[in-house]
Amino acid sequence: MRVKNQTMTPAFRGLSLFCFLISMSFSQLSFSGVYGEGTWGTMTYESSASAEEVLVTSFIERFYTNILGRPSDPGGLEAWRTVINTQSASAVALGFLNSPEFTNKGLDDAAFVDTLYRTLFDRAGDEGGTSYWLEQLSSGQLRDMVIWGFLRAGEFKTLSDTFGVTAVSAADESSYGVRAFTERFYTVVLGRQPDQAGFDGWVSALSAKTLSGGDIAKAFFLSAEYSGQNTTDSAFVETAYRAFFGRDADAAGKQGWLDVLSGGQSRESVLNGFIGSAEFSALAASYGINASSREATSASRQSAVGEASSREYDEAAPIPVLPAFGFFILAGLMGVLGIRRLVYR
Image (cartoon, rainbow, N blue to C red):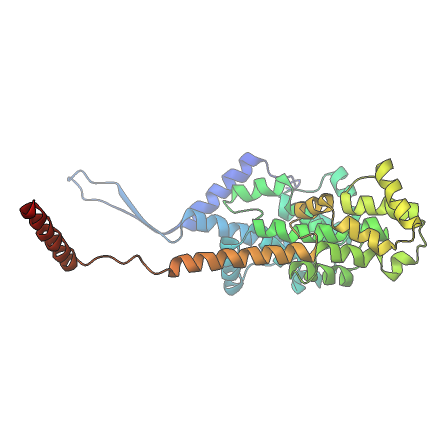
């Protein structure tokens, strides 16, 4: 008899998970009792793993099966258990999907997207969603960013919650922010999707804070690739507004910058003006990065001052306390002086 493949319903998935928990949780089961003493039917068991541990293990096993197409090995499973317990489910997913074992499979875009749906959403891709991601990939979007699109979706969070693991951590959001910020300068300024090598280089510099958001922005606008587009001053200012502020230029603001350029100022000086603005600072902060090197230095200095102040407070000499013996001597002297004053009155 041939059975048609179907996506598991939540109820069926829950029943399967319950059966899995039962099969994994009990390493020993015994049934004992003494006839005539009223204790017949006592059941005892020993648990080899907590329910939480079993859920985490089953979650990771799914990645081995769906992504690598094989069962887990003991060493690898334990290593990933540590990652998911100290970091997040996203960290595990990225580790599997970026592993040489998976990338060396050489899957085409359709198979890659299908793997993401089945692993991260626990279902086959719907027609509209699959078409969207395939279009993104065909336009040149990096697979890394497509993976992040799935990881930050509500559906992945729901799946992670089912297994009792954290879908996306604060560190994951920070990592994504750096990548999204970098990607937008490729698409907005250069008008193309990033190449992997260049993308990785900018992401590494931003993550290590050796470059600020403003440094990255200026590098894109002053690059040979952008200069080779021979844009007009008007187009340059419009692009600057979209790149630095995430919006179209207002008429007065645009005219002001055009006047600056026609007055002989360089494009680099205009870029410095955008970088130093509060609006760009806010946009950069929304991606979790510093707009300028000055902001990074200021933040570092404030942190150092705060630590120094705390250290000075902790190391401050305690207020001297008068020993008990000295206190009694002082009290005695004061008493004597008081009696003498009363006598001489």
